Image (tube, rainbow, N blue to C red; front, side, top):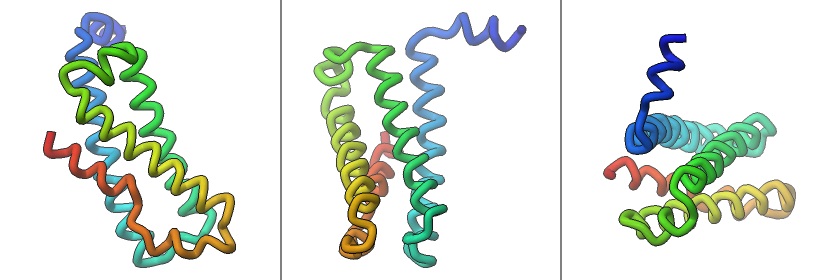
Length: 126
């Protein structure tokens, strides 16, 4: 009950800071996961599920921020360049994941490509 009251009194800026902090942790975990999967191979279903989970979290983050700010403010507002960069990385990562799933046998070339989500580490500088 006490936590619910504190959460209800947060401003949009505070909520966004909390989400950004949590996503920074997810980005770090994703980078560690990518490094481990490069060493141990990522053709196993469990690796694919983890990669899908990270992609879903990043898509949910963009969806939440669009809900919070609206499309125009998110992509045309103060941080528009970073938000467009972030959405592009998520789209490329999703495309890479779908390519890997659809062409799992014949798309061995995707294993040689760096994961697009690895570039999200750049966001940690923000």
